[in-house]
Image (cartoon, one colour):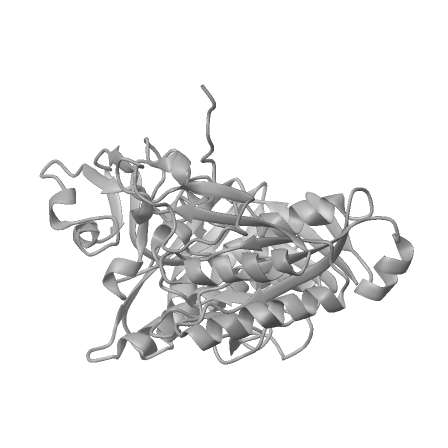
Length: 429
């Protein structure tokens, strides 16, 4: 499979009378874009706003982040949502690199977060560095939360495809073409017989009640683990529908840029043989956890895997899934390295995970979600600043009278992303 990402580097945003790119700026027809989203009568209010790096702007509460993309010559993207149900990962994709659609609105309270475009909170989220087209919507009266989540999720995807499609229909030239090319597992094993075979197990929130992840538009919750070619992951096969704590939410943008997939891909054929990614569930019941861990191991064994990278999404209940995966893989002779954040209290002295197992002996931490940070007031707030009282990591007293906030790190979108797309690390002294 060969995937070509044709990237236009976006360095600026502006509203205009049509949607197109020129000189690195993404120009947007605001009225047309808002009207497109307002076609969905599940919304009572639709408003588009812009937020760029360095501005004194806070976006709160944030639901998802999506990179504007479209298949070249086809004018669609995200199979099953805004594209026909076909395999992702092949051909050319136009990418508005550096731009992002950020969905925002009063949805499910504590499971959302915020983005600061400047100040001490900005380095904790990658989305302080993207040029953000913020879609703020309010639901129609009496719309149930799960229907609002679906409407907002689809609206974000729809807007992202619209932006890229309009740019594709006008004159454009890629600033960069990134190529991902790899054969199937059997072909690669024949090609690199002496390299260790590595599989990536990507755990996803699939617990229902707005804790969902979608693969080819199908909720992963009732599915069994499967094997994906890495190109599929990087080309729109996976979509976030979850409302997990903001700090370790894998947004749709994260799936498109999965850094573990890209890091393994970069070493493929040189240091390792990257066999592919297993998107797997995090069940709410023990039998579901055992079933997923057993199936993850079964797929890895059939591939002849020598090692595995296993990343978590969320914390608490999913920590048991993480430990089971470590136990199953290690006891089967497949060395595993686990990636997760920690919930170890504001002083860092509490137990990091809600579960433990002796087989979990190689662990990469993406940070402590309970660490406290202070962020100043912003000149502009997109959304509702009072929402911090409802967010995980915030409280009513978090918002001070001057507009500043004292919050846990977990209220910042992607601050401790467990696929590693953050800037937190440790310093040995």
